[in-house]
Image 1 (cartoon, one colour):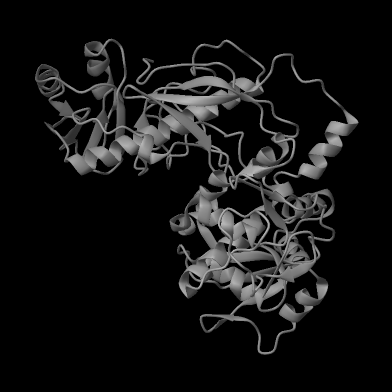
Image 2: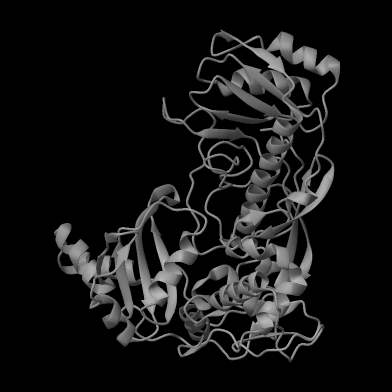
Length: 488
């Protein structure tokens, strides 16, 4: 098997490398077969992130790459990526050793940063070197790696991209980009034809797939050309961004700097980082577990009118709205508060909110495990919202807002409330695969629509200086700070 970075296949791993602890030049090796296999796979995944087929088209990766003058990226950040998590047992030092195996990556002297050995080159003929294949099974945690192994038997691959419908459901089809045309021909003319788990795949070039869809939809002229552009276009293209910047150079705003964004949650200040999709995320180990900040209601009869819960609680708790988790059609839900509840406050809720949806409800404390998981969900939803709001405010060029209650944010509910699949607020500015979510007032979802709904974000962004960012990158977040449970 071979892998590539700048377009030419290279041997995946040296077989006679030597491990020298702390060395940044000699190649590490291990005698343990299982550890060696994991190390090699981690190296290969690291190469993919930095490859010409991925780095310039991944907005988050390109932001990290471009903001460092020497184009280093922290290894601990790479380790946090979804497809790197299975190698977490290696630790940062073990991952650094794995990346040292690569002929196309290098690790800095401190062993904490990784970068390319060459400058990124714009790939040529990507569209023509790509194929479409359909007939794969349902998604599981190993599917991406198995797909890459499958296509690699026909030649060196640049990327295998799983195609997804709304809500990110796998469409059982992929676009695979080969490094050279001979591999494309080998795949398409394979005899017997390529199969997956015993079933023959539907295969064709990406161009043929594009023309097939145009014919199916009866498109002609400009509509057909627009469809071709949609299929072949990248959501983010660093080369195009750099060309635009060169054609229309813009002076950065005086004093504009990249900021760290923090979340104030249950009395603790937590750093928000970006995941590989550009969304705000916090480390679970930093999330405090505070017992007694959650109540559970039962007996609502399959629906909830938000005001029945929200208004009495805001009246009692200094105007601070609760965080409500409820899936339409269920008979129970959870309500989160900004502080532990006293016995008097619990009794107030029990006697004040006796019915929901005209049904008598009971209020209880959830189990410790249920409350812990709920607090993690609250914190992550709040982090996504706070990060999104910080990016929005920055994108509008406003400073000193003092609140995350800008347009479309702060009131909670769909999108900006941590609901709708937990995506957080609106359209995130940070990633290359972000979903869109509309901000809708509480209670306006379609009747009978089953969806987890969470009201009122916990906390908001608290921003500190981080450092300057070189274009093209994500815009920095301005100073904005709200505390958990901000009243609407």
